[in-house]
Structures are given as C-alpha cells and as structure tokens.
Image (cartoon, rainbow, N blue to C red; front, top):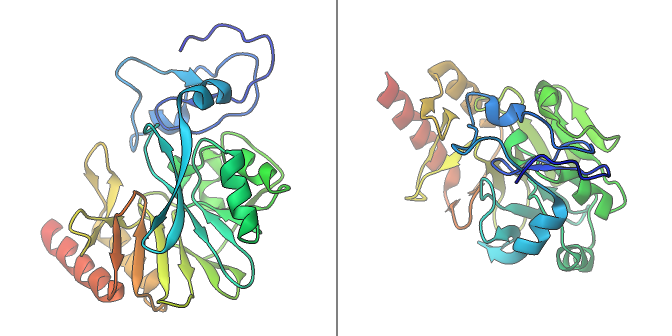
Length: 273
C-alpha cells in the first residue's frame, strides 16, 4: 500500500490494526493507535488500505460461536478478532466491530430484528464502526469517554458515556473495567441460557478456556498491575454471569464463569506478587 493521492476523500483503514480514519484525499501519516505502546507498527512500516481494496481481498463470515451469532473477516485481517450480536427482547446490540460490512451480514441482522446500538470494548476494535452504524440508520455507538482520544473517525453517532455503568436496555449493561485501556468496557447480558459477559480482551480468555488473564499490552507482553486487576474484579463483583465470551473465535468460558473469573484473579495476583 502506498500513499499516492486517490483524488477523492477516502476513509482509509490502518493495515495493522484495522481501524478506519476520517475521510481524506491521502492516507494519514501516522496511526496513533499502532504507535501507542500497547500496539505496534508493522515491521514493514505504516500502511493503509481502502474499503474497496479490503472488500476485493477479504469477505465477512458469519458463524455461531457458543450460541451467539458472530462476525469475522476471512482471510484474517488486522488483529483478527470477531464481533458478536447480543440479541434481546428489547433490541439487539452489536458488540465490538470488524473492518468490513457486508450486505449479507446486514440482511441477517435485520432478519433477527435489526440493531438498536453498537458498543465496543476498546479502541483496537473500533474498526469500521461508523460504517456499521450507518448501515443501520445511524444507530448510536457507545464508547467510554475515557477513551475519547482514540476515536480516529469522529461522528455524531458516537456516544461518549461517563461513569461506571451504562444501561443500554433491560438486558444489557456496559461496565467500565479499565485495565487494558482507561475506558475499557465489557457488556453484561441477562439472557436465557445463562447470563454472560462479552469481554473483548479486557478479560483475555486463555487457550484452556477455563481462565482469563489481564494485560496492559498483549503483543508487547506488558502485564497489568495488581491495583488495576483488583479494580476489574470490583467492577464485576455485583454482576452474576455464567459465561464469558472473549475476542476471538471459540475462546469463551462456558459455564461457571464467575468462579473461573475469581480463580483467575487469584492466580494472576499470585503470579505477579
């Protein structure tokens, strides 16, 4: 990807993190999200891709992931996470975002009742959040105000909420946990079949799928300190949950997740003591 003029405004996407930037005639010079110490710039240097180029090389896939409809990109693009559809009797919310929107994904969500909102755990997954919102008539995008500086494509749909919890509907509550990012948030979902936490990687589900862990930076192996882990534990204490859905395909703790979470906090604190 070069930085030649396109001749028209384009919302370029960072090739490394997949986050979309405000429309411009040429790609930005820098991606602040990748230059932050929690992420990294490609070894080959900063690079950009247009939505049209992305669509020509990749596709959106939809799969059931432990009973929840999930959306990802194949072949893998950028960080490789997937989004989740939280379906409730009070309206559906898209949790986290990916860098592409497809007609098929929009049609499937509409078949299931459409979207009333989008909520995203932290900036690494902001992706093409504005395009997802616009595909559903400009539904609000709930991001915590503590992460406002990481919004690379400002838009009226973005709601920068403040405080520790934000109720989206009677089934869904955002919880600010902090940790990985100051405004890092998770979504608590009251539902048949067991309440769940949609965690992104604010809580990182481990490959055993019996624990979670905590990091300030995952690719750069910087652990989270004890006070911040304890703060996450305190934020989640009032909530009951049976399952934790992580950021990647099939990385979920299914069943007895609150016990697994408590066990994980104790194990982590002992390891860094």
